[in-house]
Amino acid sequence: MIARSDEAKAVGVKMGIPEFKIRPLISSGKIAVRSSNYALYGDMSSRVMETLRTCTPDIEVYSIDEAFAALSPGYCRSLKSYGEWIRKRVYRWTGIPVSVGIARSKTLAKLANEHAKINRAYRGVFVAATIDSEEQLLHQTAVEDIWGIGRNYAKKLRGFGIRTAFELTQQPDSWVKKQMKVTGLRTVWELRGTPCLSIEQSTDPKKGVLSSRSFGSTVRQLSEIKEAVSLFASRTAEKLRAENSVANTITVTLVTSKYANPGQRYKFGHTAGFETATADTRLIAGRAADLAGRLYNSEKNYKKAWVMLTGIVPASEIQASLFDADNLTNKSHKLMASMDRVNQRFGKETMKVAAAGVGKNQSWQMNQNHLSRRFTTRWSDIPEVS
Image 1: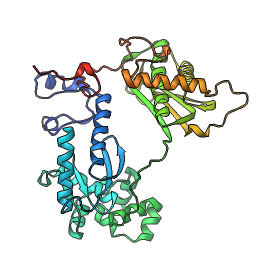
Image 2: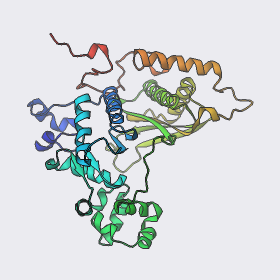
Image 3: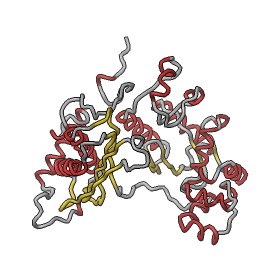
Image 4: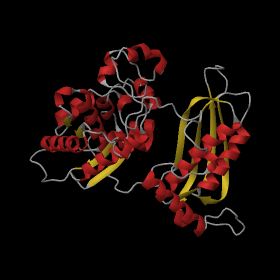
């Protein structure tokens, strides 16, 4: 279980618990279970973000379910009413309930957002617009819950007797810089209400692109391993092209069960480079399958695999080699663009490399037995009303 509603928590569903341990609870009808539905999540995320852009033009999409915004004066009579208007509009236009946190800096806004989410008395909106409300927020926030404070720093701070965000803000700048470097000092300034992180309307290029899935059942055959990593490699290549980028390094990792042989190594990876940075699915999938073959051990049972591309640069900055046979030529570029257009129009994997296998019955495919309808991206899944 990777996500739970309040109702699921109330009946004892714990984060990360294996599905088989709560099957009696599922069978009883007390909870509803849904499989991961990436197509639906991605589309609904896009709809929410586009709705937010109608509320203010300065939006930074931080993740699939989170965004920062610089509020524009004049939209509403107060910050509270502004937050309530945003929340109501998103719910009315998308059906997605959101929480809104408003404060003087990004870090404070994240804390305010969590406060709005947890405390139902605020009805989804919390505004830290005064010194008193900021201090209330800081007093109620543990150091490990501060954005940018990792587990190691939190442990270190608690060793010094610093348990809350408020106590951290009371430390001298020189001490904070010595213990937490410059980035830690910026976090403290943000907690004090001094913005150090601006709204980024153009994001930096990604440092890596990853595609990873757990197998539907244990995989032992090399042919199935190669099919899986070829498909994962195809997805990473597609993500690259969507960013107008290319990559010069690929890593393939195969994972066995960490419980089968406790204390022993269960992740096995191999990295290789391309002569010239590329986004060609054929080249990337071919190299991924080759690396999988090198890693494969017929005596092991594999549970998961992933493919990661690094060394990412803009496609316009490709430095080709005079003797490179793998160059992303104009012909291959057109072929990849055509494949992307087909998949965008008719659905993912309508067109794919043969190495990824044919059909939907491969044993390594995810078990999505509780998949909800993809009613916003697939015609056949649109609800029918009689």
